[in-house]
Amino acid sequence: MTTQLLNTLFVQTQGAYLRLDHETLRIEAPDEDGEKELKLRIPLHHLGGVVVFGNVLLSPYLLGQCARDGREVVWCSRSGRFQGRLAGPVSGNVLLRRAQHLALSDPAITLELARQFVLGKVRGARTVLKRALREDTGDAATLEAAVGAHDEAIYRLRGADSVETVRGEEGQAAAVYFAVFHHLIGPIDFRFDGRNRRPPRDPVNAALSFVYTLVRGDCAAALESVGLDPQVGYLHVLRPGRPALALDLMEEFRAWWADRLVLTLINRKQLGLQHFEARPGGAVYLSETGRKEVLTAYQKRKQETVRHRLFKEAVPVGLLPFVQARLLARHLRGDLDAYPPFRAR
Amino acid sequence: MNDFSAHRIQSSGSPGGWRDAEVVPISALQHYAYCPRQCALIHVEQVWDENIYTLRGRRAHGRVDTPKGMTRDGLRTEHALPLFSDALGLAGRADAVEFEADGTPFPVEHKVGSRKKGGLARRADEVQLCAQALCLEEMFERDVPAGALYYRKSRRRHEVAFSSALRVETQEVIRKTRGLLRVRRLPPPVADARCPRCSLIETCMPYVVERLGDGEPNDETP
Image 1 (cartoon, rainbow over the protein chains, first blue to last red):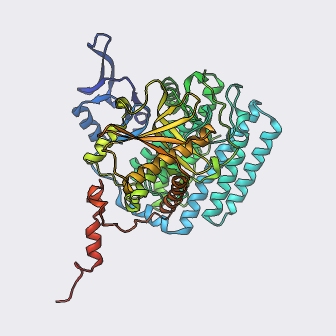
Image 2 (cartoon, rainbow over the protein chains, first blue to last red; image 1 turned 135 degrees about the vertical axis):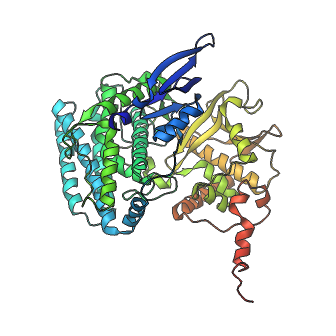
Image 3 (cartoon, chains in turn cyan, orange; image 1 turned 90 degrees about the vertical axis):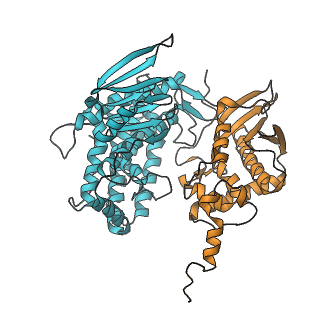
């Protein structure tokens, strides 16, 4: 199950047709003369999921096979907006779903979960800042001070006695983090004056928003795969349409996975200003080639492995949401006393 | 070359200091101005009945088929332009924004049906358009005195001047919509002349709620 989950196939070629040939997935697309041309053949069992963008067709036999295998199929608009997901037969543990809801009515469990999610986030941010210090990328004194503020936040979080306090600490730590974030960015043509969204107003924020969307989608998928409802969260307030638990789970991945990826792409000049589009009035988005660049890097990053303190063997980054979702499910079912968020080194 | 330096925001928190949940989608304003329950059904209960009206509406909003006559020839026009106001806590998109020779933005909102003869439906369209203008004023730092509603069926452009009365009303609708999204409760149905033309009538069940209120189905007296 493991490595398969990593290999998500992203198809962006417009007019492509994906079909099943015995146990193999074939991708066909029209060539310049409009003739059908075989682009790729992949054994289906190598794939954990298929994500298609825009005008891409999948044969009914392929969809049927994917539904039976529990293989994920996701449809996105051409610009990368999530549209839908293939759902196989309803399964999963009803006791787990009930435990998920009951935990939300229990202030003590809710507080503990919220605390762990934020601890995961703040520790992740601290790791990113420490690494910047090691690599000597920004003003050392400023970064030291920010690391110190994160240490204090971690200390206070341990003693926080309400979810409101936890949320307050989270907000304060994020403010400190994003206030020094520009020290982590090398190229001078990329400026960063704080996090903004809806819409993003500069290239760094555009890239961050896009990668957060990817990680959030992976977290939601992981939660669904272990039988949890991605909308029933603890740190994030329930709101119609909001995947509160996916947002909870992604907190521990934000800094060291999403932010680091954006920083790497910019600092290694794999992303340049030419990969962004500025709309009149201030909104900025990744261009199609920019999105492609990010998706490729994101996919590659998912295949890299990291150490997980609870497991002997190294875990691929792309599997971490699944591992963490499973730990969360175990905790909710009473098998683990506490939820252990992932700790990056 | 791209210019990314136009907007600079302070270091922490969301721009304008709005919390996530407080940023109002511009489209919700039109819904609210027409009927608060319709707004709550769409934006709180998250129902979306795909019927002939909404289907036409979505197709009409597709960028590919900007109808002839909707925007003026010779003017620089931006389609599907992202809009925001940090001051008012608004976010959304404009179907089209024309830019006059002097750079003044002029929003054009696409509506499917015929030009509405005054009344609440038209006023709701005007409120939505005015909210777009408020965003454009903040984004481009210049006055936006007018815009237009384009009614596809009648192929008529109806020009709207953003009077101070309309601006006040729009701000009021923004405030009330934010309140509705905050409490997340479904207001009672209006059950009046608005309902037969509403695309959500089957989900809303305006008259069923009314009848239940009369105690009919629970009437246990012999």
